[in-house]
Length: 349
Ligand SMILES: N=CN[C@@H](CCC(=O)O)C(=O)O
Image (cartoon, rainbow, N blue to C red; front, side, top):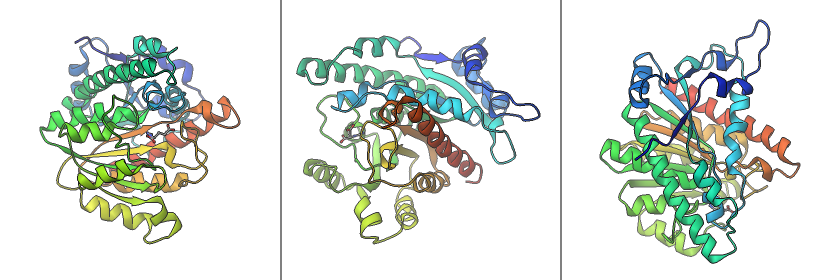
């Protein structure tokens, strides 16, 4: 299979970088991959030199559209980069352990999907087929990262991409993995063709997902079949209503209790940004969690010794009510805040 990785070099990154006199920026500490050796070897070499974390983008909205949702998730990654790369570099973040790898190469798939309507049944089926091809590419790139002993932070695209990540980690570790997901949707819909609403269901059916817990699942945003399927799999959740409306336990208690049940296998940390109020996403909400709640979730999950990756998905800057520029600004800031929370917690795990 061809290598589906678009590796960034200095020329790719330069347009996103700003400078300020007497201030070192994050991009001046972050590493790029050596393109003179093949990618796996280059990543293994990077690991030898002290790199621990890999930033990887997925610029697609095929998955959300194949789930009858809105487009725009292809722009989350660049919104993040413009903000993250230009943070001041200081003692509070280990930028020198971060490799900016690049993106999964999917231009042909996004081109093929561009004019397909999810309102037309045949075109919807085509979107779902393209999403399955995307899964394979995500898995291939993630397999390289795990094989090099590095920890991916995967940004952009729909929640469909959890499947490629989980497949790669599960095959690498030769065991079903666990996942904790901060999300109003369980993404445990039927295996009706691939899309952003059924990645965890496919992963479970393929025996790559051992235990799964959803934090903040909205009681009225999941159909009965999803809730029944979660119960049949013996997967658990703490609902948005239990945490935020009825206040039966705190977010901290819910996360700590859930994480205590997920210690016996590699752990994936998943955040669907549509958990956050007013976030520009396909499924926009003003009845969600705050940004600091999401940061706290990431902090607690990343503090687990068995955490193996962070996946931040579904940001769609064009869905901001005030337009694209406001969406890029909000998505950039919020994704950056969550990556910062992850990197800081991992350094102390
Ligand atoms: N990952 C998101 N899943 C939601 C989609 C909501 C939307 O895009 O509108 C779901 O399947 O319900």
